[in-house]
Structure formats: C-alpha cells, structure tokens
Image 1 (tube, rainbow, N blue to C red):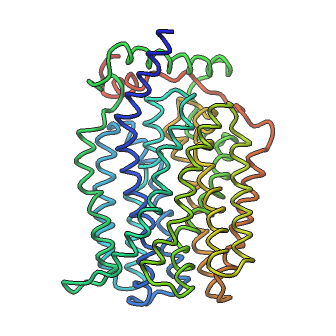
Image 2: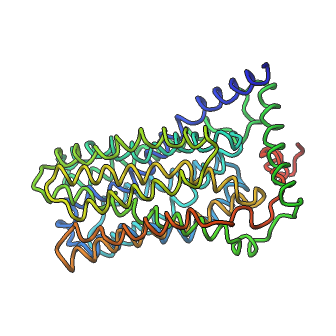
Image 3: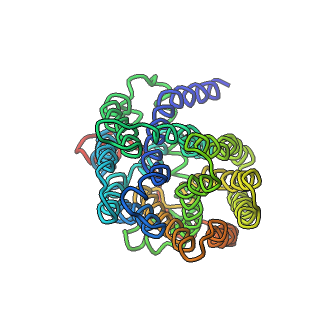
Length: 447
C-alpha cells in the first residue's frame, strides 16, 4: 500500500537523521557519568577516598539529578529541545572536565552533585523528544536502539578509560586526563545540537511534506484513541499526576533497575581490578558484559514491539538480572565472575526498551514531560542507593561479592511490581496534540 510505503519512508528518514546523533550524545553523557568508576582505580588513593566515600560521591550524582529532573524537562518543553539539550550538554561537559580538580572527599562529592544537576533532564528530554517523531508502535525498538549507547559506552569506554589511566604530563595524573579528555566531547557536541536537532517535525526542512502530514495525523489518531479509552478527561494537575498510581509504580520499578545498573557500572572496574589485572586488561575485560548486553537490548526491544507485549518483556529481564547477580555472589575466579556479570548486564539492558515504551503508552500524554521526568528522577535515586550500599558493605566485610546482595533484592522486587495486575490506565489521559502545535502555542504562534 502507498500509505505503508510512506510510513516506512518517514520512519527510515527520521530514524537515520536523528537517532545516530542522539546515540552519540547519550554515549558521551553516560561515559561522563560513569567514568568515575575507572578514575577511582587511581583517584581514590591519590585524594584519600574510602570505599564508602567513593560510593557516596558516585551516587550523589543522582540526588542532584533528582532535584532538577522535572524542572529541566519542563524547561525543555518551554524553550524547545534544541536549545535546552545544547545547554545541558555544555554544562555537564564543563563540570566533567572540572572533575580533574578534585582534591579530597568534599570536592569530589560537590562536583559529582553538580554534575547531576547539570545533566538532569537530558535522558527524559530525549525520551519526550522521540515521542514527537515516532508513533507508539515504534517506541520500544527506537528507545532500545537509542539506549544501546549505555552498554556501548561501557563496551567501548572501558578499554579507552583503562588506557587513559596510563597518561601523564603537565603535572596531571592519568585519572585527571581521563576526566578532561572524556568531558571535552560534550562541550563540542553542544554546538552541533543547535544545527542537527529540529524542535519538531514541522521545523524539519529535510522531511517531505507528505511524510510530515502522515506523522502528524498518526500521532493525533493515537492521542484520540487514548482519549476515547479514558472518556476525554482534562489534563491532570501536577498534584494529580504525582498521585497517579501508575507513575508511582513505574518509578518504583525503575528504582530497582537503576540501583542494580549503577551499582554494577560504578563498581565493576574495581571488582575486576581486584583480581590483580593491569589497567588495560581491566578495561578490556570490563567491556565484555556490555558487548553482549548491547545486542540483547536491541533484539528484546524489537521482539516486544513485534508481539505487542510489554509487561513480561519487562519482568523477565529483571529475573535474568537477579540470576546474574546471584551468580556473582557465589562464584569465584575471574572467568566465572565475568560470566555472571555478563548475565546481569544483559538483564539490565534488555528491560530498557519495554519499560519506556510501556511508560509512554500508559501515562497521560498531556503530562508526558513531567511524568517521564518524575519517573526518571525518583527511579534514579536507586543510582544513589545501589553504589552507596556496595561501598558500605565492601568496607564492612572486605568482600565485593557480598556487596552485590542488595541488588538481587531490588531486581526481584521490580520483577514482581512489573506483573502487578489491574494498574493499566488507572487514571485519565487526554489527546496528545501534535508536538509542534504545542511548541507553537507556547511561543504564541499558530499550528
């Protein structure tokens, strides 16, 4: 059919035009967020950080992130994706570079907090931005493809970070060069955002008119179907939105995901290093789990879209994650440990696409910006608790293996919450207006 060809052409054109750059941007974002795990191999000794203090500083990023997440995403809607994403990238890049100036526990904690404040809004902003361009039938696979930058950042970033630790010069140690050289790309890419990312389809000169019209009509039809299911209720207030039990449930599920994900990401380099490997070998071995996870992430998101099922596609990866973590607590030897961590990482990243596809389908479209930001903000508090618990247990017991135990509980609870019955569409939603009309209205313009 002509319409099918038009749809395929539009999705292919939009995907190739926007998604590769967004993947690269999130790659840089995630690398700057987690490279502290490799820097710690030298930095902790140089500036006097205990395991508990490092866990606290690594995780406090998410407290800053939590405080600014919703305001930042609302600013993105107000000022437009292009301008606000550029602002986010420039500020986080500069603060990441400033991490080279850490002198002790307090400066480490302060800069990690500020990095979270600066980066807040980037990920939920991109998730919201993708809803402007892709109908719901495409979102799990698109989010999965976009979020492949997370495991890829560890797959490629691990050997790079390990190698950078060997640099020295101009009075700087390897860990300082790591922060400088890995923070600089974010600053440079901020300028590219202004050129490459239109605020919405109506501002994309490269999108043919027929494809632009098809996309606007498709998104409006989906919004109308949502309204029909809910009786056409008005846009919920912020208080009503935050009391929506679906949003609370999504945030709780995501809490378990981030606690496990960042607990592994921040500490795995030190766990691997503890087996007596060199920095480069540590980087190469640390990359193995994320190479496997990258492939699994795309295939699982695609399968979720193909069969039209979300909840089991969300719960099963949590069980895979729990199994991998359990293996990490009882297995000894570097090869079995890496196998267990590979299973755990695969579970962590398989769940990303189905989770965000389900969230954007089930939550009120009219409150999408604040809802996505709220889930990400509350959920990412797990990114504080997970790394902190690992550090505290490591200091108390001297064992990295035992420190993985709390993450198993988080994964199992999130798996159970994913299958709680009867919570879908428990609150009203309203039609999703065409994205560019919303933007134009906020600027005082027409459709």
